Image 1: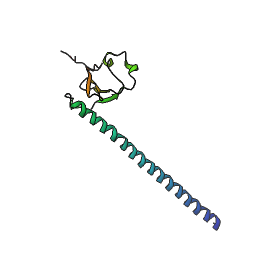
Image 2: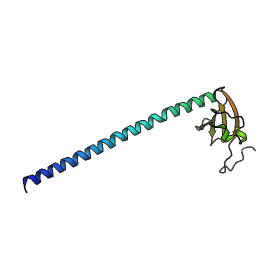
Image 3: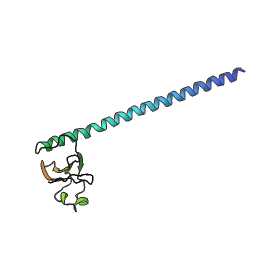
Length: 130
């Protein structure tokens, strides 16, 4: 085999190794950054949820066997037709306990519970009030 073909093969193998190493390194770097961002993004949400549960828990007894789904009222005009949200204001928090079938409307600015209501589910076989 001529020498120039052997040099081309070596050059091609080295080039392929460089490309594969660079590709793997870049993928690994961005995968690590993605996981760091994902973990870091959850911390403020969990901290805010815990603080809200503690704040409402000082006013009333809350279920301890589940973490509520929390929503913030951002446009009260969209929910004004619903009786539960009749006194809702923008910025109010809704704590929904699905397992315990309870919804709590809380106003953080005044530290007051605005409304409490049962949550009815189609999957529920029991009646809420007996």
